Length: 345
Image 1 (cartoon, rainbow, N blue to C red):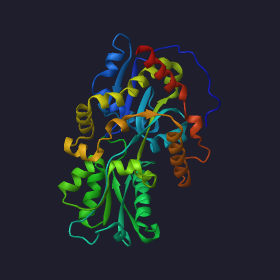
Image 2: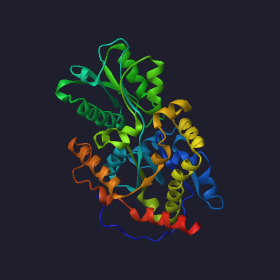
Image 3: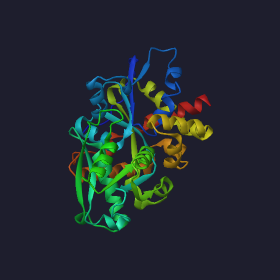
Image 4: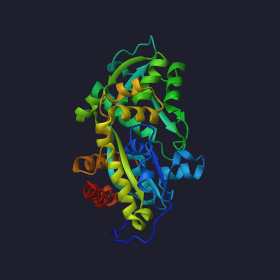
């Protein structure tokens, strides 16, 4: 784990900065598709490039384990914690929450009509290639929540692995493979997430056992395992060398939520484009929570959620026991970004 934080003076401007995000709702997604980064640094030698724009394996792998130089990433918090535990290269700037529909599905004309019917069933558990599987972590946390709601013990079910692509593959086919495994009889029940999950459930004519709506997930602490935590992170050499640039990038991301409030129709369209889904499915999946989901922060509640996720990963030996989420945080960047926004206003 890193030692005491050093104060550094910016000594250079990095000409190329990579940014990465997951293919659902993110502040980066709402900002990047509107050319905001390009306008911010129009008169400076700073270019922001999406990881999606390259097929280079080292770049795609480097955004997962945060070894890619000059990287700003807003995506799955579990992967960010794992990467920090691997090399302590990243720094946490802010936390986001994605609330969208989570759908438990079974084969049509099957014998699973309620969550209590999960007893004795084979539950789909995706496992991506590589040393760490974000999809597996997400599914396990979701299944724990679903089983708890149904008052079903994990000893009463069987987890059936479903092999998927490496997590660095953009727009991987994890959900489609789970649907195929379900229809082929390899599994009995699966969990599909978000708008893409709604689309696949409909197109495959799956039986919906239960749907947890976005607003229900937001409102209930018992459904916290269905909330997708996002971590906004940056590699520390970039932060230490160009703190002002990082603060300006962060400031633009902080404005994404208010923009989504002012332009809800356009925000919905952007989220649909990000997820490669129909706007109707995005509308149903996010249930009016796009602007709220785009909001970034580092308040005590969000930090407690990251600490709980870290402990969950430690219990399963997916991150080192010595990992300290507080040492990972750099709250002064968020403060600098907010100060910069006030100065401009």
